[in-house]
Image (tube, rainbow, N blue to C red; front, side):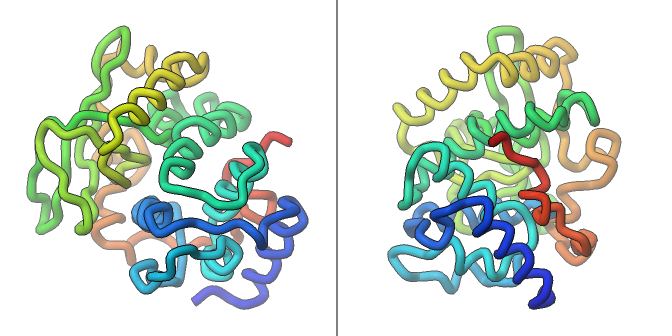
Length: 253
């Protein structure tokens, strides 16, 4: 459990920043995507998302249980696109496109490296293989670019997803968050990413270097991201959340 004082400060900052924060809702499919995004060890919540069975879930209610940037990221997307009700398609576009603008704005690639920044953007990729890793399912994925394919290894597969070789999936920072069942939507997101100068530059650099983005490789991320997803207790709890300054990734206003 997070301290009430910390949560109250976070919620006050979110309400101050996003005028319609208390009105925003997520439908059930969006909640499922949000739950899988929170497998990422950088995301921290003290709520069991599986208990949220209502047709619509209030974002501010979720914010009462989240100490990291998720609620602010979604609220900023809703604000940018004048939305109150968030669907799974909205959430996927949020992390595939709008979030990339914030990664760019905060010079994440300059402060770390292009691969690290590229991994923080949601992608559509084809499943190359599925394997068992210490009792958990993981996948190797491939994204096509105009230069060369980019490979992702040791990508965590949540228990609720049916992931098979040859399928296309959405993934974000080492976690498959949804199957790409709507081919038209997946192509649309991919085309918009190709047209984005910043995302294309990250893809070009990763492809040219023939880099495999391996979430079990400590070198790239300074930790074993996969291990922290399989054993969440090994991820250090956030003590001074950057969300007090709008989130880990500060937003463009």
